[in-house]
Image (cartoon, rainbow, N blue to C red):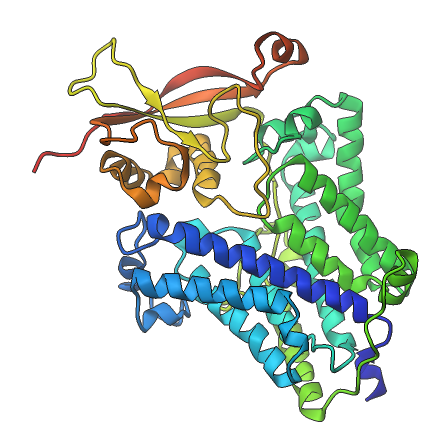
Length: 476
């Protein structure tokens, strides 16, 4: 079928596949380095305990068959190596069926992790990476042209990400409608980056322009993805620029990077190669009949499953970041339907004194990404995902968000658990663990230009109250 492949999209597909492979590598690496403390057999939310009451049909995963920390580590590192191989071009050096098998294995391996990750893996970009990885199975390799249908399915995915986020904003917080949300967002977002302080101090009229431009980028531009070239490329370019702006202004794991990579499904590869003087991939051969049949079947599946997210987009009770099936296929997306006006942070402290008193010296634990010491400039971690730091942000909003895991977290600090301490930037008790741990709630705000010059501090914080009273291990 001549219509099956799209001429001129070879370079676009190359960017798509290598970009997704890089993001899968980051995701598997984060799982390998963080799982023991979070979901390991002795973690805060252990996988074996979770699987004891969650059946396979609700959470398909290889770990229903067997779980041990050693097996999970081997699984995660194997995914890391496979991602690295695909990133290096291995999928283009093998037959088409083998390339498809590589992508299918990446998707299935990460699905197994997400479906046992519980609260730690409850972010929309997990489903986004899985859905993108599933579509990549059918994108082919250098031996075939890029299939038109799969490129359109990827554009449909980008559309849902952007348009869903735009609608949830208009239907949510009034500050999106009066263009004032960015007065607060750069300061109160989950994990600020090194430039967030500067973004926050942009003039308020520019913040209003930012907000209006965001509405255009999410509610108008996505329709351009379905127009003929060169307009589709222009729409994709605008989405990419907007997402890069978000990358510069904060840390949102791989959410922005997946969207950027997927937007290349609408970019004319030939025009891109000419514009940037890049070499074009060699012309690909025809697609075998069995491959065409699989792509048609996948397209039909996505079309059927699209009913639920499409209905959700049109609903006044729109939900964001929701999967309608256990395989995370054709999901609904959205972000920041409401904006916090103030930032509250939970500061965790410990002491080695046997009995805390009014004069007790408490020492603060330092986190890698979330604000802590006021003189520390926020770091850039995205696309790497610091899961504990993100959930600490939710804990600052309400203790209810931390009910499942905060107690186990404190218990592991009191026992000096090495896996948990590796998630932190600074452990104030490098020898013996503390006798008591407490948590206090502070209100944080960015300092002004004057305060920064006078004190060198990026943050100012004010104690609001107690989050957790001094706690010790119960005596045997």
